[in-house]
Image (cartoon, rainbow, N blue to C red; front, top):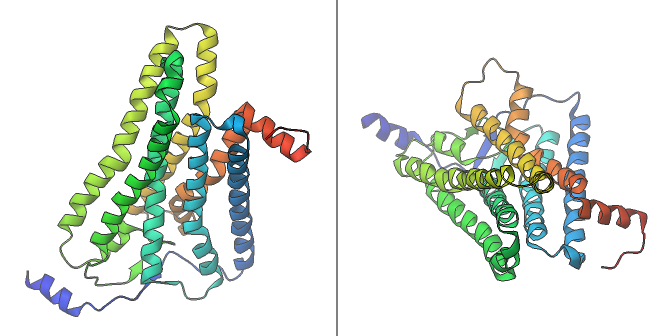
Length: 318
């Protein structure tokens, strides 16, 4: 107890954080900046293109495509929480970030992750209804329900993250060095020299609600889909595989990135090169926003044909 009181007395008010994962890139600074800028432009261009195609074309105003549109909006949201700060930090000699900007980034990054899991869960439910109850699909997936599922995913994710950041913001910090290239809540909690019991308990509850619950729902829906596919004809199985494959690829890709982030944050990575550590920590923020538009743009025939007609400027009724 005395040790804790002394640490709190010695602590000072933190107004900025040092992002210690950056290393000297003076020789290739401009090249890294250019590569990341191109990657960010590709992410913005591909996601905006598919959002516009879905919104403008009335034939795509179906639950599956509306959920996809929400997913692409979230990809823009998550990547924009990372890349602008990352680009500025690469060109800077001093890698610091202000307290308000750090917590803004924490809110955006954690909201992105939570919304991604919720939307993927909603999309799996949509596929479950379409495959298991095809004759009742239009009744079960009315416009009001689609709107409620989409808005509920965003609002509940924001609420969970707002509570998390409001618990972390008042913490008494005994340091300001974050061993990453961006801010996250776990790094802030680790810097605290005050009691973090409430933060840890809420972290478990939040993880259960934002990760395990949607993943459990996804596993359940796909178990039911597999049961229907095994008892159906070959044509039905082929249709189920073609509609579920992009969703499964997005899920596996995003979960892989999250696992990389958990391993990089929680386990000792002393034997791993710094560059590889940074790549592991950035995977879930950089790869899905580029991977998902590519997968759905190439695999979903209706989106692919509309994008092709848009580029070729063939007559198309919008």
